[in-house]
Image (cartoon, rainbow, N blue to C red; front, side, top):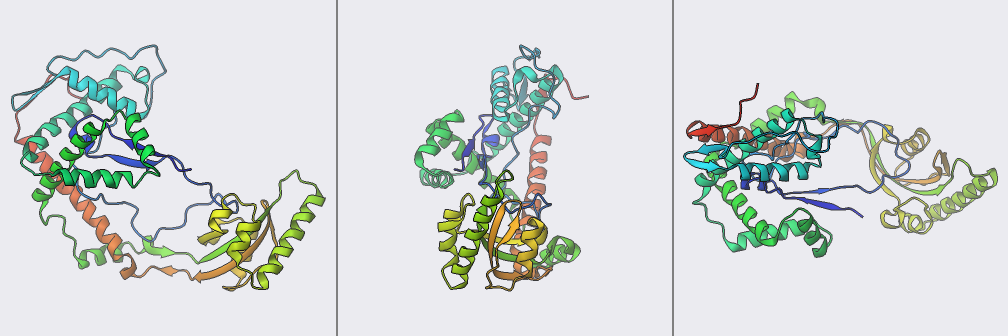
Length: 374
């Protein structure tokens, strides 16, 4: 079963704007899939956010972790750590935000060197500074209780049950009230930021077409087929007798399918592939290099609508039905125009947000007691 994580750091409302739900694991792939490179995508890989957020939550440490120690090296912070337009950012605020970031990242505080910890404090402080600036600028934005309820409903839809949502909320150290406060601030800041961007993130059809024409390699696809299969699994230690029994079972299944029985129902009844009872053996579209050679050769040599004789691979005996084929070629612009537009819009949003944040910071009076980075 897919498990979801609610990452709701209490670094700052700016960081809390990045409430993220991520699947921790994926269903196991079909057993015929070969460990090959992913098929080329038909659209840019970057995914735009639904609305611009001020900044992403900082990573408190560098990639290289120091050897584990019994306690983290001491880094003395002055109090206050900084002043922003005369308002204090206290030592307690920085340490609390840093501890939350470390916990959320899965890094152990004891594994951080003094330099790594100091670097983390710098990133956290920058977050808190921007939070104060953006929160003050966005304070006039109106967010209703109905808006908050709608956002919570969106979050809940990403969990299998209400109980799973509440469990992840608790695991993230969030109460319902804290979540509502974070969401309210997030919406205020998003709306204020969008009001500042205005039409600065507008993308025309001409912009999208230019990107398409200058990145044609990104939109090329190999030949693909859509197929389903029924698998009779054979383990490497199985006797010859077992192998023959599985082949005989595969021949019977193929005969039933060729006589017109519903292939999906047969797969649910007979296939020994994990998940076949739910998928009906459907593998979707795949390129030739995504499957082991024997399976790929059989599938790509078949005509749509045909049923194969049993095919032997390292996984066992397969009966394959090919339902559709797509020739190699370039995805037409019209099919990917919306994806390109969203990608370019996201890039423009990020640029605009960074420019707005820089303007806020440049116009603010900021005093920090942290030593500057080397």
